[in-house]
Length: 390
Ligand SMILES: Cc1ncc(COP(=O)(O)O)c(C=O)c1O
Image 1 (cartoon, rainbow, N blue to C red):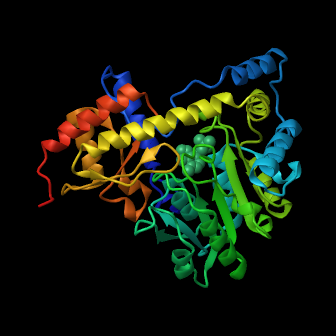
Image 2 (image 1 turned 180 degrees about the vertical axis):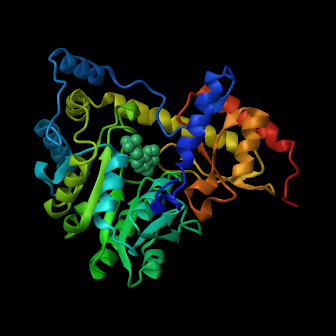
Image 3 (image 1 turned 90 degrees about the horizontal axis):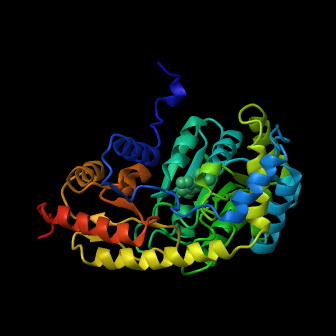
């Protein structure tokens, strides 16, 4: 029994795997290496935790304005201006978890039958939100020759009379691809030429090893048609705090705020004060985490080199690999096989769109020891399978 709008919307594939792993661990099966988590394994930096405790000690424990506390909206706007070049003010910022911002942004802007251009592969929540809003996902293949970067040429081919929005995610979950400035600029030109809205999900912005991040809203004329999504989850190891934001012109942000007033009301008060410390406080722990992610990226690529039936190019950002596997089975069956045979949890590529079939997402947001152990187990399990490569 469910409303029709849910008929095309499965549970999040990434959260589903994470839930299975938690349940297995709860049931006492503890020898599982999880490459399924989309979250840093580091502790939230101490200065942020202390700011939260101080907020609680001051009993800052009531509702806040729905768009967020003024100090945090200002911190977000100042950072977006200074670091990303987005011409925004605090009134353009709505504080809400990043996933909620995507959900409310798409529900606010996408009408029945509107087409939304999405990279293929991409994070499954985009497609789910587009469908919930009554829109139609229009996937753009990114896997031929451009190492998963969504090119303006491919976007141009997908634009049609019903297109209303282009969705970008750079660095990308699940591929780690980082779009070049020219590519972002090319997509911006298309959005202007065809009068399209843009949603730019930049939650992995700080986790880049090669290349540089370009915020599409910083490009000439783009602020007025762009919703930028960001948050503290990935950069500051704060996934459980549920804090993020949307930045958009007032004509758009007011609609997200309307939805927020009827759903979340506001983000947790003392978490918002901790968020001010995350943004305005010392950034050394962010730099340290990124250094460690780079070392892990290099390590996991080295381990991958030793597995003949898994292949992918080196990701430039985020903390995921998205290799192909040369075995005759679906990605869902392969993920199930690795969990059963090797006690290693990975996410089936199929949850990231049509181009994900035949691939696995391996999150290396875990210790170096787990990477070595887990990749070794995968190698052993795959060598037991008949390779489909002649
Ligand atoms: C691409 C992408 N965007 C947004 C989010 C959601 O972030 P948050 O947990 O801060 O809501 C995630 C989380 O995995 C993600 O991978």
